[in-house]
Amino acid sequence: MRIAPLTFVLAVGFAAPAFAQSGGVSPLVDSEWLKANAGKDNVVVLDIRDKIKETDLGDKPYIADAVVAPYASAGWRTEVDGIPGMLPPLDQVTKLIGDLGIDNDDHVIIVPWGTDSTEFGGATRVYWTFKYLGHDEVSILDGGWRQFDAAGGTRSASPTEPQPATFEAAPRDELLATTAEVETALKSGVTLVDGRPAEQFEGKSKSPVVRALGTIPGAVNIKHGDLYSGELALFARPETVKALSEGVGLAESEENITFCNTGHWASIAWFGLSEVLGNRQTSMYDGSMAEWTADPARPVENRSGT
Image (cartoon, rainbow, N blue to C red; front, side):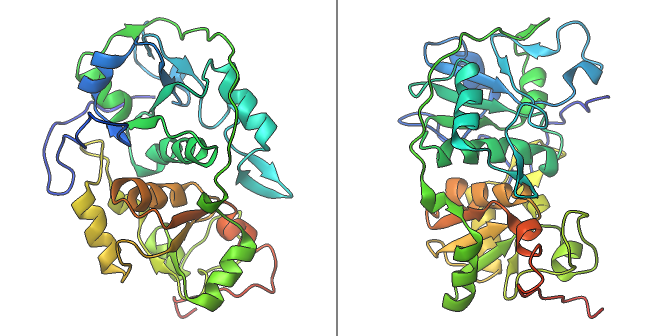
């Protein structure tokens, strides 16, 4: 697998740097921050890239001093009651994190490939997992491996062998929306944000894990691809997220629930609204359309006219 080199072209809404990176933990850090802070006590670089060995990165395909837990295979998501891609039971996910040598005092820097919005969604989903578990000391490397490599970051021939630690969860239930809460939102008028592509939102196509075409009635669409530039390998800046939010009639501090098919693309919308824009009234529906449509009695709105 070939990873395209990073092209440093600035575009409105995606221009670096991401955020001021001092005086607290930023949701996004850049490669210069990582180069300056990697190796410090209580900074853990978490490489979640999939299929590293299948790339053309030569004999040093890893980030020096990083621990590796691939998004698709390490156990970040699991099937629960027939619904794919769900948050694992607390004992499983906290063991995964502890076995990576991460404890509650560590600042975790999540590193994806940085290829496109779907792939970057692995980082936002793992970030959301840490936040749900009550861990605020977490950031994503904006640009991922592509930015790190282009900036001359130190590479290694093998991943770091972590020393197991104890990680304790303090779940924030307000970040995890259940099916019952989505049903209540339908009645109360809480905004539901569909993070899928327009074709799926409108009901022209669907994921194989979703029973029916369409979306949850009354939902608005913030497409995950609008929140990430694959060319620049950068997440959207606050002003872009604000424009997207206002574009669907969602106020900056308005309660909302993001969803998609299995809580992957939904995490991109959640990250944009909650962490980049700062709307702390945002939660994510983990089961999303896979769980919602599993029961034919739940309503689905098809806007395609078919």
